[in-house]
Length: 106
Image (cartoon, rainbow, N blue to C red; front, side, top):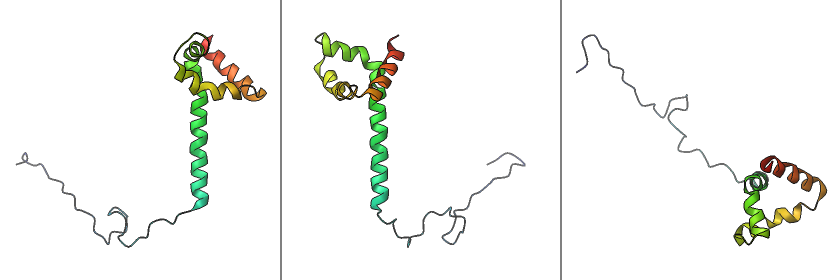
Protein backbone atom coordinates (compact mmCIF):
# COMPACT_ATOMS: atom_id res chain seq x y z
CA UNK A 1 0.00 0.00 0.00
CA UNK A 2 2.95 2.32 0.05
CA UNK A 3 4.61 3.74 -3.02
CA UNK A 4 7.29 1.80 -4.83
CA UNK A 5 10.54 1.92 -2.93
CA UNK A 6 8.94 3.30 0.24
CA UNK A 7 9.99 1.60 3.42
CA UNK A 8 7.68 1.38 6.32
CA UNK A 9 8.91 2.15 9.83
CA UNK A 10 7.41 0.16 12.63
CA UNK A 11 7.71 0.91 16.31
CA UNK A 12 7.90 -1.77 18.89
CA UNK A 13 6.49 -1.28 22.33
CA UNK A 14 9.13 -1.24 25.05
CA UNK A 15 9.14 -4.25 27.26
CA UNK A 16 9.10 -4.36 31.03
CA UNK A 17 12.78 -5.31 30.95
CA UNK A 18 13.70 -2.17 28.99
CA UNK A 19 16.31 -0.21 30.98
CA UNK A 20 15.60 3.16 29.35
CA UNK A 21 12.50 3.78 31.46
CA UNK A 22 10.31 4.16 28.39
CA UNK A 23 7.97 1.44 29.57
CA UNK A 24 6.77 3.52 32.52
CA UNK A 25 7.13 2.96 36.23
CA UNK A 26 7.77 -0.50 37.51
CA UNK A 27 4.67 -2.09 39.06
CA UNK A 28 6.44 -2.79 42.36
CA UNK A 29 7.72 0.78 42.87
CA UNK A 30 6.34 2.14 46.16
CA UNK A 31 4.65 5.56 46.11
CA UNK A 32 6.78 8.44 47.38
CA UNK A 33 6.72 8.81 51.14
CA UNK A 34 4.77 11.71 52.66
CA UNK A 35 7.05 14.46 53.88
CA UNK A 36 5.62 17.08 56.22
CA UNK A 37 8.55 19.37 55.50
CA UNK A 38 7.94 19.21 51.74
CA UNK A 39 4.20 19.71 52.25
CA UNK A 40 4.73 22.81 54.39
CA UNK A 41 7.28 24.21 51.95
CA UNK A 42 4.96 23.64 48.98
CA UNK A 43 1.99 25.17 50.79
CA UNK A 44 3.97 28.25 51.82
CA UNK A 45 5.26 28.68 48.28
CA UNK A 46 1.73 28.45 46.89
CA UNK A 47 0.47 31.00 49.43
CA UNK A 48 3.33 33.36 48.56
CA UNK A 49 2.55 33.12 44.84
CA UNK A 50 -1.16 33.74 45.48
CA UNK A 51 -0.33 36.76 47.68
CA UNK A 52 1.97 38.24 45.03
CA UNK A 53 -0.64 37.75 42.30
CA UNK A 54 -3.33 39.24 44.55
CA UNK A 55 -1.16 42.27 45.29
CA UNK A 56 -0.26 42.79 41.65
CA UNK A 57 -3.90 42.53 40.59
CA UNK A 58 -4.70 45.90 42.20
CA UNK A 59 -2.82 47.68 39.40
CA UNK A 60 -5.30 47.02 36.61
CA UNK A 61 -8.22 47.05 39.05
CA UNK A 62 -7.39 50.34 40.77
CA UNK A 63 -10.12 52.46 39.18
CA UNK A 64 -12.72 49.76 39.83
CA UNK A 65 -11.57 49.65 43.46
CA UNK A 66 -11.65 53.45 43.72
CA UNK A 67 -15.18 53.45 42.30
CA UNK A 68 -16.31 50.79 44.74
CA UNK A 69 -14.75 52.55 47.75
CA UNK A 70 -15.74 56.15 47.07
CA UNK A 71 -18.35 56.33 44.29
CA UNK A 72 -20.94 53.70 45.22
CA UNK A 73 -19.51 50.99 42.93
CA UNK A 74 -19.70 47.21 43.39
CA UNK A 75 -19.20 46.40 47.05
CA UNK A 76 -17.53 43.02 46.45
CA UNK A 77 -14.50 44.73 44.87
CA UNK A 78 -14.12 46.99 47.91
CA UNK A 79 -14.26 43.92 50.14
CA UNK A 80 -11.80 42.02 47.97
CA UNK A 81 -9.12 44.70 48.12
CA UNK A 82 -9.78 45.98 51.65
CA UNK A 83 -6.91 43.88 53.12
CA UNK A 84 -4.51 45.60 50.72
CA UNK A 85 -5.90 48.94 51.85
CA UNK A 86 -5.12 48.00 55.46
CA UNK A 87 -1.65 46.66 54.62
CA UNK A 88 -0.79 49.86 52.76
CA UNK A 89 -0.49 51.55 56.18
CA UNK A 90 2.85 49.75 56.65
CA UNK A 91 5.42 52.08 55.15
CA UNK A 92 7.56 49.79 52.91
CA UNK A 93 4.58 47.87 51.59
CA UNK A 94 2.49 51.03 51.18
CA UNK A 95 5.28 52.78 49.27
CA UNK A 96 5.65 49.82 46.93
CA UNK A 97 1.89 49.64 46.42
CA UNK A 98 1.67 53.37 45.65
CA UNK A 99 4.55 53.09 43.19
CA UNK A 100 3.01 50.05 41.50
CA UNK A 101 -0.49 51.56 41.23
CA UNK A 102 1.04 54.75 39.86
CA UNK A 103 2.53 52.69 37.00
CA UNK A 104 -1.00 51.70 36.01
CA UNK A 105 -2.83 54.98 36.45
CA UNK A 106 -0.33 57.47 35.05
